[in-house]
Image (cartoon, rainbow, N blue to C red; front, top):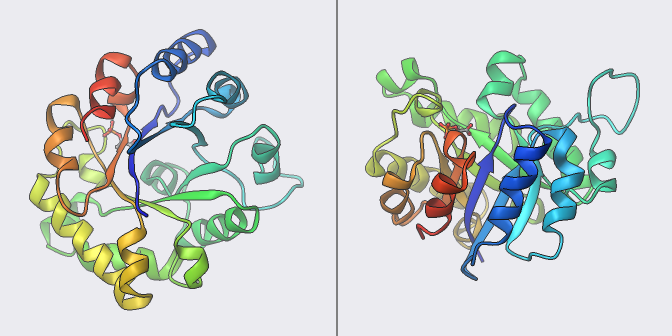
Length: 250
Ligand code: PEP
């Protein structure tokens, strides 16, 4: 069954003290049974945040990236077995900042998705178009290609294990949110793509999150769209004041 998810992506923000405090305050919230919260913490804080939230079934911890190789000479990188060894079982892959700033290709992301599934971890697969593509109304073809290049090689049993996050790049960190209609249109399109490639049941059961300037003021309307199952939230996940109401917006 698809789940409602409020996922925070803390990116390269916070310090050990502020990250721990934020995790504890989110952990202490009364979170509805129909909502899962994911905290996408910086790697150095993951073990702490896992420890602080380990007794809370509603709160999960995700890494923001991983390397696809099991181990080896990749200075500065973090492997999936390392993440598994500290109790992390979800990883954000293909975030547009990884794609744009760190030149990650669809092929890299495909390899990360494969390696995560092989290790029984959940990939939170990000996709989304840049502004130029949206202005030329090419967003559907663009995201379809991202699916074809990175996840549509998966079998039926594997694709169902993904969480998908549609994040139009023009809406990330810009304060410019996709309208609820724009989000719904894309999410319905993506669900239909999955249904055509696999089947209706699989498509209905995958959580598709919207990301891009989600805030307390717009979360309710976005999350109430039929095909929007929650949000991947950057800036507004950095304080209880903002993330709390987003978690409560379902
Ligand atoms: C993100 O980083 O995934 C994101 C959506 O950021 P923001 O909410 O700040 O736009």
